[in-house]
Image 1 (spheres, helix red, strand yellow):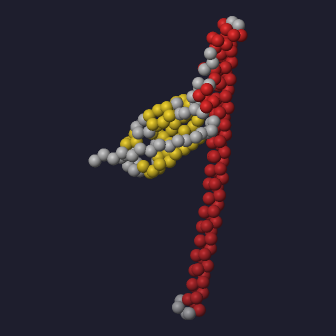
Image 2 (cartoon, rainbow, N blue to C red):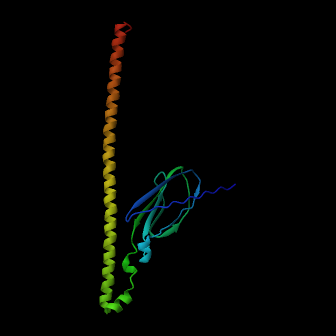
Image 3 (cartoon, rainbow, N blue to C red):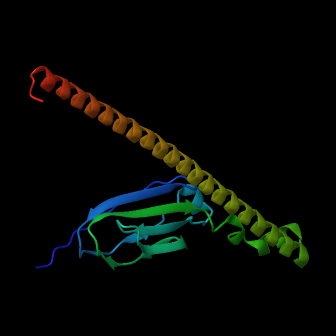
Amino acid sequence: MVTAAAEAIWLEMLATGIKCVFEEIHNNIVVLPNYDVIGDEEHVQANILPTIFVKVTSPFGNNLHHEENITYGQFAFTTTEAGNYMACNYWYLLKNWYCCKDWDSIARKEKIKDVELVLMKLEGRVQAIHEKLLCEKEVIFREEKMREVSEKTNAEVAWFSILSLSVCILATAMQVWYLKRFFRKKKLI
């Protein structure tokens, strides 16, 4: 007997956004993810499709799938461990405007010579690389903020644990003192 289940998820992402999806999956299940990037109206008019970075990890942190600079994809894996599987999408625009401009018509309209045209193309590429670096910098900044929050939370949990342990030790000491006093009054010890 073969059973099949299919689910679809639609994620709307901001520029340089990160979205993660978690799903609990049992052991020995075949998973066939399929994904597509759909640009908004602005991207469609400019004939630019944003690309994403896809990463899928198992409950124990093993990488199951990793791809960058893609607009669609499909892969398969069989689960080897039961638990929450995580799929993260990082959105960034890599197919920038310089690749989509019609440089020949620009050169004809503005009467640009070959050298100037090459320089304009290079300037477009430099600007696209600069924009990509700014996006990467923003992603790194967010990761640093998340790391700081995690470290702060970890420190607070450590102090709370120490405080809880101290209260438990104090309560135990008071109980021992009270019981000793009680048994001495009753002349049992």
